[in-house]
Length: 326
Ligand code: HEC
Ligand code: HEC
Image (tube, rainbow, N blue to C red; front, top):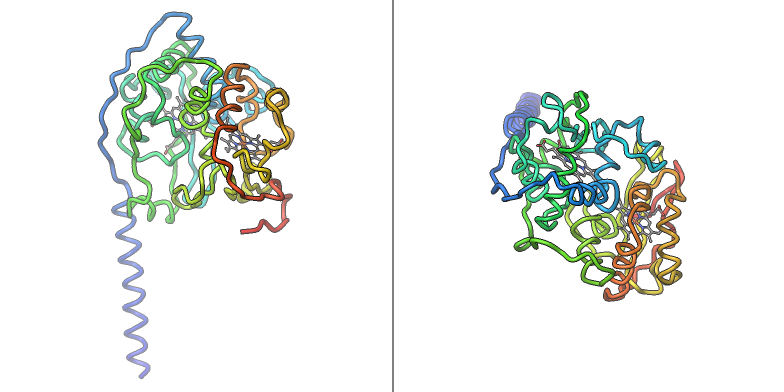
């Protein structure tokens, strides 16, 4: 009997070892995706528009800066995008790269098409799948071009950022293709007219500012959307960057259980211009406070036009140690 148990135990250990070996050999997959045709420019109006998006609605500057410069970003300074911010989540430590034109450590060695492909297909220049933190797949050709035009115009900063490191869990997720590159949902627009309309608000909230990415309930392992869009309820567990605070995102649909019920358009604009009220909130309030009236009105009008969804979220901020409801 002892012998049989011994053999079973040994085979189990063997199976686990084979599984671990399999994951360690298979996770580092590369994917192919088309290279978008994007023409960048040195025109100062286009560069200024790119900068406005990078530091505002598209909030690249909330991630692609050194962690010790985040306070300067909060203070509204134009911090150079030399990378370094890290994001510790169970699948690993994700590191935002240097986006200044330095040839060794930055985007100097990447082509415009490679950068545009990362934004549109979530594929790194080396073909690795990128975790869904940058949902710019449906951004217009003109906005992608303006952003890259601005990135190229920055002063180069030599600052090496180590590669993203995956935990065993992260490697398993990659091995089984639970995270893989995703392209646009249709043909992205060539250009979108900037105006305080529902249409422009829809574009900003879904394809540029990622409001939907946080204000929709999602599976925390794979990022899959599991609740009605914009109805809130995504659970953001405590982590290092939030100093142990946890969050559940509020409902942004125009239902009485949503936060918009208490604000008219003016109050909404004021709320965004006053920036962050919760010190550790993951929402990039500093970047969003740089959006202009046209952008903010467009977003407000779009949110107001959504189907109201009943989803009461009684509490959105949880102090360290406080239990967060499932
Ligand atoms: C929420 C944080 C976040 C935001 C916002 C963000 N990024 Fe990133 N970005 C990252 C992280 C993290 C990585 C590294 C991902 C990895 O290595 O898997 C990255 C990687 C990249 C890469 C490198 C691809 C490669 O070839 O290795 C480019 C280019 C990039 N981001 C551009 C942008 C631009 C442009 C914006 C704004 C329009 C932006 N990012 C906004 C977090 C962010
Ligand atoms: C990275 C995640 C993230 C993104 C992106 C994000 N939010 Fe939030 N949002 C949160 C969290 C978490 C809270 C609750 C904590 C707080 O109030 O800061 C919140 C709170 C809010 C509130 C309530 C603020 C208050 O004072 O009660 C509004 C309104 C809001 N978000 C709108 C938006 C809009 C519009 C966008 C896109 C332009 C957006 N959010 C993008 C995570 C996010």
